[in-house]
Amino acid sequence: MNRIIAVHSYKGGTGKTLLSVNLAATLAKHGKKVGLFDLDFRAPSLFAIFKMPKAEYWLNDYLNGACDINKVLIDLSPRIQGKNNFFVGLANPATEAIRDMSAKDRKWEMRALGRLLSLRNTLLNDKEFDYLIFDTSPGLQYSSINAIVAADFVVVATTGDRSDVDGTSRMLRELYNLFEKKTGLVLNKVLDSSSKSKKDEMHRKVKDVYQVPLLGLVPCFCEVLRAEGNFIFAQDKSDHPFTKILDEMAKRIENNEVN
Ligand SMILES: Nc1ncnc2c1ncn2[C@@H]1O[C@H](COP(=O)(O)OP(=O)(O)OP(=O)(O)O)[C@@H](O)[C@H]1O
Ligand SMILES: [Mg+2]
Figure (cartoon, rainbow, N blue to C red):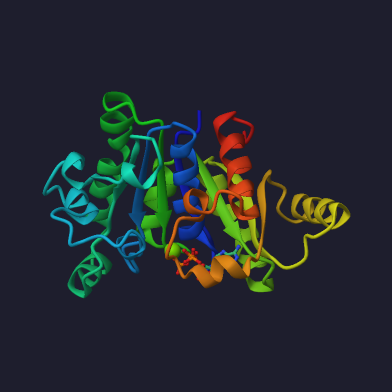
């Protein structure tokens, strides 16, 4: 089962945070118990997206060994209609905290990996979470590598941008393979996927270029851009095509069709 999912990419701005939030919200909407974690310590964003007041404990504190994970988890179930199963763990957005996290050494990162790995026991086994979703920093940040190592499955977000294609192919061959991670590619911000033949052609291209399963193909939606992160599409805009695509992606994950 792919219960710990890292959302990663080679380049920045490929849609990791958007996909993490909406995938987590969709799984919660489907009745799963979900924890969504901001592991982008360089540029935390879930704090702003969920318009949180200052948290008492951050994921930074958990990884520093200063508190247990229950202190970090914030219950945001009221954001998911009629469900009681959506939690987030936030990265500290204060400048001081970002600088502190960037200065960590290898030894600290190894200990942090141990704490990340132990979430499987504390949350999946003891607290009966169904899924943990890790939103990560792009590229080869240590925190992202830790997230990938701790995950069962990596959702790789990419766009059609040439430099993104090359970098993503390299990461698929070298990084994820090295850790023997299962991956599913999301081709995001697709400009022309209007017809079935265009979609089929894109599916074929992705298989040729990346040689990994395609988890989803997401068009570039002006409405998503215009929303400026002000609402969770998958929750607040139930009829939007973006929501329907996320629904399909979540079902593929739930049905274990992405091995
Ligand atoms: N399919 C899409 N259609 C329209 N806009 C999109 C789409 N996917 C992402 N965006 C927009 O692109 C921008 C970057 O998205 P997001 O912050 O999720 O990327 P990211 O990979 O998390 O970036 P970073 O690497 O900086 O963390 C946001 O403004 C987001 O709304
Ligand atoms: Mg992000």
